[in-house]
Length: 103
Image 1 (cartoon, rainbow, N blue to C red):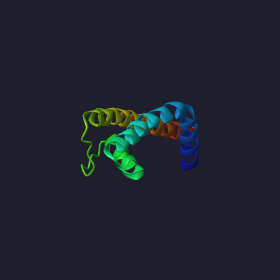
Image 2 (cartoon, rainbow, N blue to C red):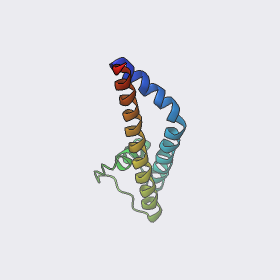
Image 3 (cartoon, helix red, strand yellow):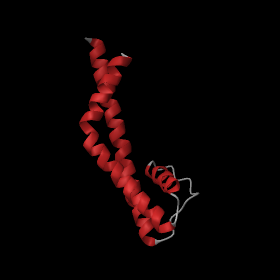
Image 4 (cartoon, rainbow, N blue to C red):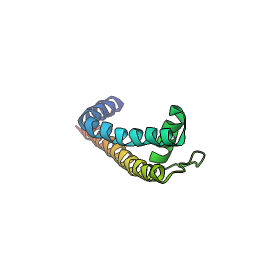
């Protein structure tokens, strides 16, 4: 069953890869721009991007400019899309694994 799940997961990821990569670019691009505007290192900007995008929000790095805060909102919405897309892919792979197990 595990083999069927991973095969279905990779098949689903192949189908949604264009959307997934677009959402990741919609997160990383504004994140790097925020990092440039605020003066963070690239690693800090990426850390901020994924902490914000996954709606964890530790608060240790915060943007100070108005445009940076607006971009952080964009990152948050893209992160919600990324989480939903990931959940949908996993559910479809689980469904395929359980349907394959019943045959």
